[in-house]
Length: 555
Image (cartoon, rainbow, N blue to C red; front, side, top):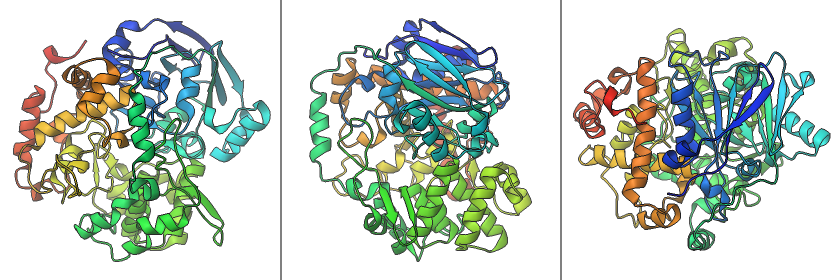
């Protein structure tokens, strides 16, 4: 089975030392990326660790496909215990850092301890340099990137950066790379902030020599020539369809249809797009560099999730205003989905939907924990009572845009996902939208056949995150192509994904997570939800309480 190669680099931030060790057995069993990081975390992180304590660890990792020239492979994984959910969480980002990471020669980098001063870690094939950077305290992501370029000649594509939100321990702070790409969900930027790490840089000339089958270029050619709407409008292309299905969360989830959708839909974004945008080696080029000269705003996006969070869910029907919110989140290092939904919760409490000046002010206040922003920085699950609004989260993570009250399998996915209410954990929504030409679609309503398919999708997405292969490759990656690329039977590859999901669940079980956390604010509205949940547990081999039996914990 194809897998990542190279040693684990462990960096002790307290002692400012580093060491390497061989982890070949783990790489062989877990491929790379999320799989290897999950296995390491399960072994090395205490089950009762506080996410902000020095004993928490952060893992960065990449996979064998970062040695290819294939589209959909410009991604990097990050894993730690989330300050937002309290569970083990993996997030991955696109951009261009993945191959610079691979050039350093390590399969994974582990950060432990905490620095007594603000530092930048320069990771190369010669080791780690610790740079004290007190003057960067409070610096925005662009300011930090500019410093690294001006002082060291290190461009944005070699960096991972924490903004003020991470330094201020905002529970949904992101880690930014290539300046505008985010390790977004779960607040892992705040974990770096708690360790006094402002940025990491990567480089070297020691990329592993991993032989990728030449037929990879079939996928690359198809990605280059396919006339896919995402090449023009990114993920926001689905917004009109979601709205037509009464499946677009609006006004802090109180409604499911937004009358101002035309102002924030795919056509609106496409009108502001001024060039193509992509990730490393990818010919699909689905990113959205946008700008509005009159407003003086330039950003990348917004994607569908952000047009929901800062658009329909906040009562905003102007794409330029959503672009401004997106740009502020990138500047300060905030997960734009959680930031937008948390702002929407505040707007609901104050009856201020559509107040864009207030929205942008709140984003700044959250990033700096100023005034009401200090409370909002804790996230919806911790602040909803004080605001007097409903807790629209699962396991502490707020919802993505794909509406589980309409797409019932996606609703089940939100409930059981170890990461919380996240759409990318299984990408089950792609099975339920009535898209032309899909031969594996399920009806949106009901649960028949969905628990089994959900498990397959969770396992496949865990494999993708370990490979690492972008989840937007779904129209191009067949079982036969997985087998061709990774040199193993598809069922054996899905078994890798099963081990990853099970390890995550077991880790979280030890932290107190069980069936009571696998629920939805609207579970009672979904006929058959509890039966589907039980069918999911049974197929996973877990108990009726959603707990992994001790004999089922993977090695």
